Image (tube, one colour):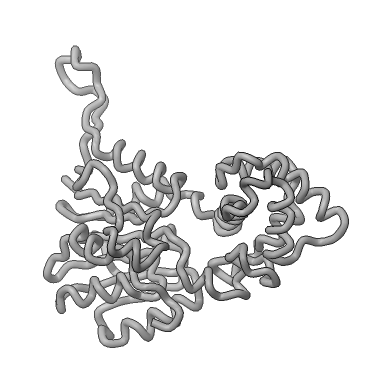
Length: 310
């Protein structure tokens, strides 16, 4: 696959989806098409609806899935627009869905996309969808000090957010911070020396990327909505790569797996809450040691799986 990594935890995803003959599946983050290919290859009667907002990914997955022509529909849009996509595809209920919430290797490795903090002269971009208006350069140079501080603390969980933001504001007053290398230099100057050489820019870059792409906006509502589009017995599989998105998925699954919340002293239920899903595994699955050795980007992956009960 040209420039795209192997799909992470593909065997675990297929087992989690429990592919049904004649089933209809949704891959909301098609990427290079690795998971989509595996789903379609699992059974010749399976159909797939897939989305991705990255134009490079759409081109790659179109080529990748060419052996399955007629069995899938592909849309260039955010997976959070699943309702209109599924309606357009004529799909009312799903047998399963997959969301792989990680950034792709292709996006990281393509210098001009501006995702990698080690790419010195790469432009500060970080857009997963190059049709979007907001870029990392505009966030770094245009956001208020208070807004930057909130982003780094909430999205990056950065301990040195105050000093990093203070120095960003100081440096941009001298001239625009336009490259990944320039931003990394500011970050390195803002942290203690002992912390400086341990990928100290990673959390700040993550925070800005999340802001640029609105990665957490509406995620809770999307997971709820997609899960409610499952048939009885249908499966939800979600791969997360950092604590913020994993916490959202975990809390949604927990809430939907709970039934009546009335006090036990009540003779009958008055809350009307019914259990919607059951967790296939209490704790998230992680990549095997072998996969982590061969693909270091799988080390932070967590796979949560749920089954629709009604």
